[in-house]
Image (cartoon, rainbow, N blue to C red; front, side, top):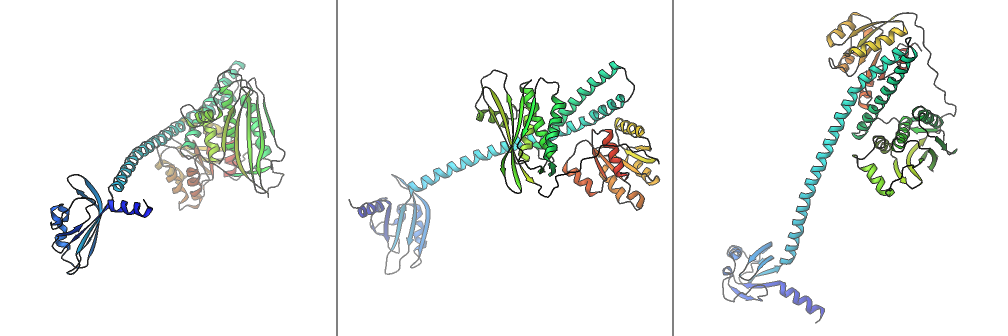
Length: 503
């Protein structure tokens, strides 16, 4: 059979043409889809054809219908239909196109799409709900750790004060043990707080020019101070081609390396670790660096593949080590990546971080001068606004140890404003997390005061943890200094000197 004959046969099997007069009487039909008899009324075959009585009132009109279901005794047809009304001379006609297979397929596909959409919708809702619950949980955890910072800060400050007193050798040993434990608790709280902040997107990243040589020294100093009591060696090597002055967040890089070292030593104590830093890519204004921590596995166990290890350790938060997860989150925020690799003899943690190069920075950066306590000749009046008695006691003690300050204390809005209006304070300390007053409203009232002396009073804000939102809010209302707890006596005095313009 010729191709044209095959096509013609196929079309004839799928198309039925019916000729009709103006009264709807059949004059001819090819009967390819259903049997019809010449001389009979088309309306006798299906109720749909009742339309012809109205449609054939017009001459030379053509109407198209889509997806018409025609139920006959032996079969059902899903069809498209064209009705030509004809005129007084020419008969009208009905052409029926059998699209049953096509519409059935479309219906099945549509049904599958609808089912898939419903399935994906509920899946998406479940994921969204889980994400919302995770963020809420992390916010609650961040608030809890923030609340813990205040008593820990107070304990640390009190221990520093005790350390300055005359103690016996045994008392100093006990005090050192307490300080070590307190520092460890404070570090864990800091890690949890940083992890929750990074997980909900409020971890601060501060890009600034830093000296890469200084960063290496800080890493060495941190490693020696924290891991000195371990039977291990930490060796650091780097490429001499790495530019000295880079733009990035050096504090976060130090935090990444420190947390990875903690992860290594918690997983496998007494390890020898080699940190090697090499250039991955270099251009006149940018550089990518690879930080590789190589350490030897002393534990004997069946090792998973590198791909599975990365998947399990880095993706499943329930199995993650706190330090590794925190490091990973910061690396992601810095647009870098991390990879773990295990072998029977040694293991690697490799991270990549991109930097810009500060080409204009002089090689001779002025070193930060060592802190020098200033002898204050005149006495300065200070107002401390805080509703926690332990915070009040510590700050008073630190100021009295320095000498040169008269101190007033307040913890209520109305009382604070009264004291400020009556006394020309040289300096005001305000805790931003007080529960008895709105600290930002009080600061705003001071800065908008009609009295120019009050309006320009230096203000040092005290906060339990630093956020970009809070920093911007402090900057907007012209706070002179922003001090994060826990702080050292030197940090406190330095902030006071700057606020009072003594240096």
